[in-house]
Length: 77
Image 1 (cartoon, helix red, strand yellow):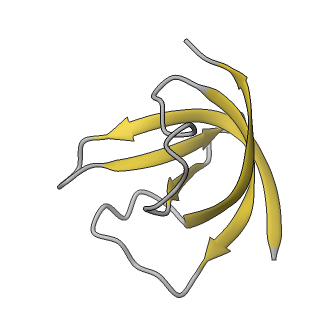
Image 2 (cartoon, one colour):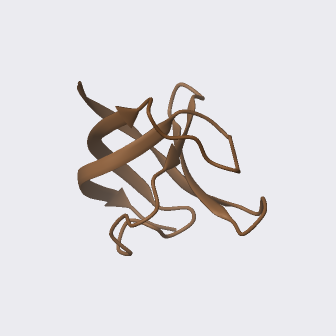
């Protein structure tokens, strides 16, 4: 199932590190490794389309794993 979320990109220093999307509603999604490097900039606000992967577990375990299919940068700090 495809979802669209808007939020802020954050870098989490857990283990080897993880990237997260924190939505405007306060929900946290872990961005699946391999996402476009242009998305992975801490403080950047983006609208992300993707799929929540329930078949994947991570060591960070900061929230549902989001496989990003496309994104649009809204603003960057």
